[in-house]
Each structure stands twice: as C-alpha cells, then as structure tokens.
Image (cartoon, helix red, strand yellow):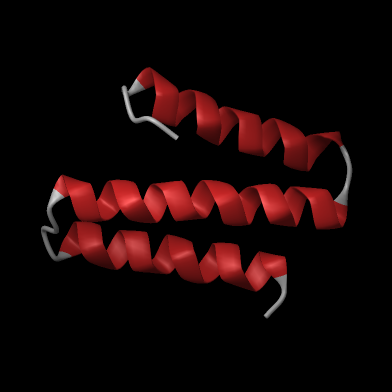
Length: 68
C-alpha cells in the first residue's frame, strides 16, 4: 500500500472511532500511528509541504499532552 493511501485509511479509522464514541486511548493510538504514516508519506513524497504537515500534526499532539 502506498503511503498516501495508508494515511487516508488511518484518517477514516480515526473518524469512525470518534463517531462511535471510542475511548480516548484508542483514538490516541490511531493518532500516533497516523503520525508515523504521515512521516513516511512526507519522506516518500519529499518537499517542504509534507514536512510542515507532519510537524503540525506532531505539534498538535504535543500541545494536547499526548506523548509521541
């Protein structure tokens, strides 16, 4: 599976968990996995935009006190 598809599927899983009222620990685990997949995508695609997007996600998770 290519990196972009992995990121999109992970986002769909996160949205489904949120709609289903999943426990925060489940969503956090998915967000951590999303960060890793987004990093892989950014490295595969190259460019500053991808790196900025990953850093934005990392910052959001850190800001919300979620260790990644």
